[in-house]
Length: 112
Ligand code: 5GP
Ligand code: ZN
Image (cartoon, rainbow, N blue to C red; front, side, top):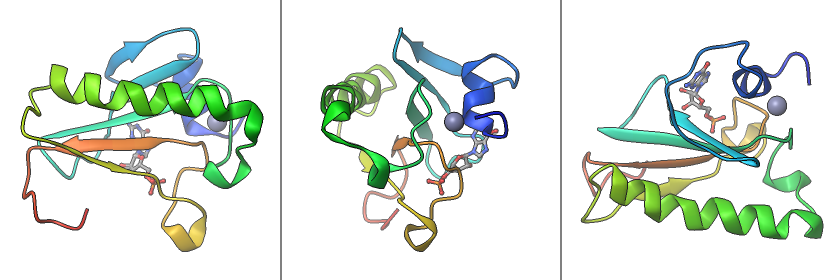
């Protein structure tokens, strides 16, 4: 998707502060963090949102979810962390390339 900023980050056409990469996934710091640690886990393949996922994405989604606690631990979020997936305009999604927010180190009672 030529106009997708996260695809551009995957392609190296836009900078990001990467914290993890493998053949299927990329993780980088959110540019506007709302906690001390705020990571975005994305698939390298362009998927618009969780609503566009199909059974063929089951393994990919599982890999994303299993990566979240590992990276949270590696970033010092020992007492816990939050995950968030905004889906569609009504769900507050602003970047239409599937991503899972992983964040913590702020107010644990905050809703986001
Ligand atoms: P959404 O509301 O779609 O779930 O959140 C998109 C997130 O992407 C926001 O938290 C926003 O700060 C982050 N973001 C948007 N553009 C960029 C960018 O170019 N680089 C990085 N690292 N994060 C971005
Ligand atoms: Zn994309």
